[in-house]
Length: 324
Image 1 (cartoon, rainbow, N blue to C red):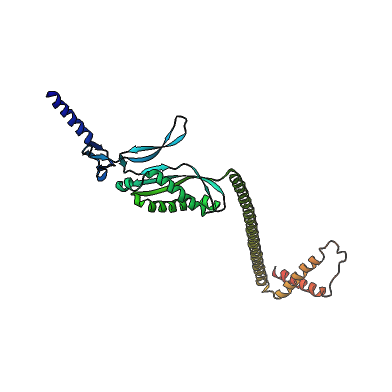
Image 2: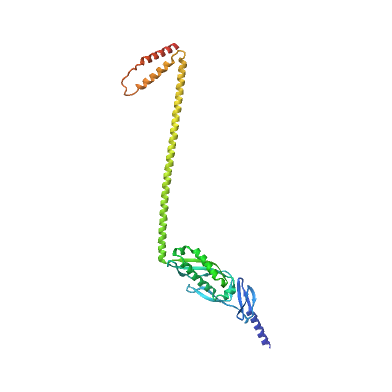
C-alpha cells in the first residue's frame, strides 16, 4: 500500500513538472489542446495540462559554421518564438541585370514577429520562406535595372525590396523593418573594364584641373601685370603733375622775384626819370649775351638800333652819377 502511494506521489510530481513551462522575456509559446490552437503563453511562469495540452514546435532555419569553417544551413525544432528583431544573412546569389550582366549579391534582412499565431500556422518554415521570397524579388528588381544602375541604386533597391517583403509577409505575422544589400560584385572582366574606365576618368579630371589651374594662373598674371601697369601710369601721371606744379610754382616765384626787383628799380629810378629806358637796355644786353654765347658764333655784330640802346645806357649812367 505504501509503495502504491509513493508511486502516485512520484507520478503526480512528474505530471506537475511536465506541465510547468517557464517563458523568458520577449518570448512566447503557442499551446495546442488536443492538436488544436488553444492559447499563447506569455513570459513568466505558466502551466499546461500534460498529454491534453502541448507546445507547438515550429521549424526554424539557422546557419551554423562547421568544423571545416564552412557555413551550413540547419533546420531546428523550436517551441519558443522569439519576438525580438532578428537578422538573417542570406547567402550570396547571382542575379542577371537588364543588360544581361551577371552580378553577385548578398543581403541582410531585419524582421520581427508581431503575430506568433500567424507565424506558426500560416507558414511552414518562416526563415526559409522569407529567404526564398527575398531572392525571387531581388532577381525581379535587379532584372529591371542596367548594370550601372544596379551598382548605384543600392538605396532604391533596399527601399523597394523592403516594401515588397513587408507586404508579402504581413499574412505571416512578420514585420520587415530593413533590407540591406551588403555587396554587389560584377564579373571580373567587367570589374577590369570599370577600373580602366575609372582610371581614364580620373586622368581626364586631373587634366581638366591642371588646365583650369594654368588658365587661372595666366588670368591672374595678366590681371597683375595690368594692375601694375595702371599703377605705374598713375604714378607717372602724379609725378608729371607734381613736376609741372613745381615748375609752375618756380616760375611764379621767379616772376614774383623779378617783379619785385623791377619794382624796386623803378622806385629807385623814379626820382631821376626814364626807368623804361633802363629796363629796355637791360633786356637788350641779356639778349645780346644769349645770342653770342654759342660755340659756333664767330662774328660779332652791332644791331642797327644799338646806338639808341647805348644812348639809353649812357642815360642810365648819368642818372646813377647824378644820384650819387
